[in-house]
Amino acid sequence: MTDEGDRKRALSAEASEEPADKESAEENEVVGPVKDDEPPAKKRKALPYEKMYLEKLPCAEMYEKSYMHRDIITHVVCTKSNFVVTASSDGHVKFWKKQEEGIEFVKHFRAHLGKVMGMSASSDGLLLCTISDDKSLKVFDVINFDMINMFKLKYVPNQCEWIYRGGTATPAVACAEQSTAIIHIYDGRGSTAEVATLNSIHSSPIVFMEYNSVFDVVISADESGMVEYWSGAAKSYGFPKCVQFEHKIDTDLYEFAKHKTIPTNLRYSPDGKQFVTMARDRKVRVFWFLTGKLYRTYDESLDIFIQEQQLTPQLPNMEFGRRLAVEKELEKTPAFQLCNALFDESGYFIIYANMMGIKIVNVYTDKCVNVIGKEENVRFIQMALQQGAVNKKAVLTLEMEVSENPGLRKDTADPTLMCTGYKKNRFFLFSRRDPHDVKGGENERDVFNEKPSKEEQLAATQSNKTSRVSSLAVLHTTLGDIQVKLFPEYCAKTVENFCVHAKNGYYDEHIFHRVIKQFMIQTGDPTGTGTGGESIWGGEFEDEFHPTLKHDRPYTVSMANAGPNTNGSQFFITVVSTPWLDNKHTVFGRVVAGMDVAQQISEVKVNSKTDQPLDDIKIINITLK
Image (cartoon, rainbow, N blue to C red; front, side, top):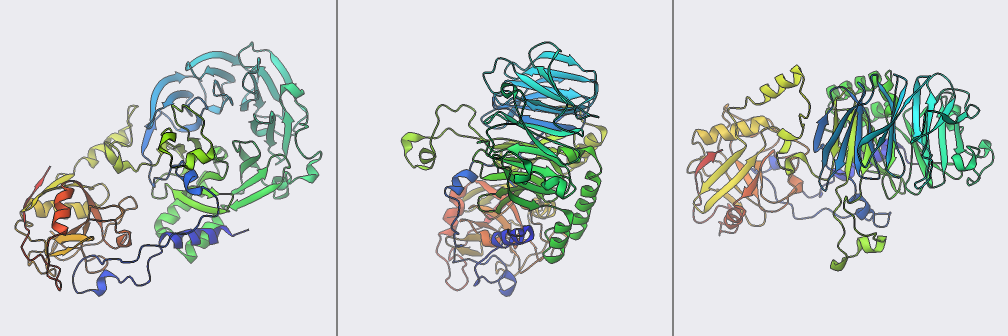
């Protein structure tokens, strides 16, 4: 099996691959970007229709929205009925409804007086239960978002799980004791009387129970690392007959006990034929359900990351050290037990969080295909995924999904990954949209649906003190207006330099001194030669690169330079996608209106030797809004 470090290095190399004949800007005498003539080569995918599967997964590098609880959020569940339910350590439970884009708040319950210990949604998406150290179990009707039953327990519960198939008359719910190996079975809609008591399955306290509705089988594990299969009520909770083994010695289920570790979480693939586990040794394991055989192992131990950082640094050393300290702290807390891995709806990809972000791994090809959330200052813990269209009208086959037939228009899905964070009273939503691509942008992505703390109020007040910068600028040129959206939240110094120059009239009467058709238009040099200009501080200033601001689309506004950290006053506007300029020129804006003006400037006649227009095109002045 490929070593995890090799997979990371290969993915990093693929992401940063550039044509060999490309020259850096510092080798040119003229300040500005260099044109690339060779598009990157496309690589063949080993998994059929992999692109289609990936289009149904979140891909944004940063979370789109976050919502609050009053205390640290510990659990998040996504139901088959398109509801999202979150629970916090103070016993509060909130219901949210998935919309065509994002989610909407529905109802808030003060469900428990103590800490929420577990939460489970039924396989049909109709029922939800929560347990707490206040010795209570609460049952909710998900569709009507109402509490319909309460159980007062004689013990402190540790785990809960619905263990019935949809349509069953008795919705059975299993509840395990915290200090013993006993599992109690109740009728979720009935009285508090027990339906059954299971005390011979395990010999140590239970760490998880997970129901496979496809085969009507529960897999549970205990603190000694032992994993057990047992049937639902229809088979009297005995050993299942559907599996292809009789004794565990014929399986790899002793994997955890053999390595002296404890599995902490388990999730099934949609067809029920595979399951993925997380364990205290930080290894992610994928098993075949029917045989109990180990299929894949992904080592996410801290030693792997330390070695990788030493070989090919993924983060600045100070940031890596901070994250490493958080990981070591996390291992000592109950929150580590809540970390999970899950399958997507195709069953080909698993998703889990580590210290570098959230990994999406293709288990079919055994390759990491994406890492999201790497730039966020959050250690993500528990996740839930919603992929299907909210208002799906028809079931489409795989062939229909990938076809180009306009008569088979697919329902628009909004794949969303909901994540809790370590010591965070927020949960975070990753989608296919970056924060700055949606209405409100970065400034409104952290929704204050609860009263913020004093620290949050102070931070919000300080962040609003940006009097020297603006978020919108209009370049009034001799050929028309170009409206630019600026990004002070990502590159504050670059935007400040631009805005102060604009307010002072520095750019007035500057010509577009360098114009290259099908590439870009450049201005901002008071000498008009391409060699002048300085910053508002005098001289040059450093680059400000941000992962969400790339040259991945036309009409990107970026700083011209003569090499790393040589920014002055010159800037350019691209008229095509120019990805080879990423991490070489600071992107600080996007044209949102007047694209036709920028395009018109790029097509004027120029001097073939200097790329300067034969007829001067000037910036009359710049208005900030």
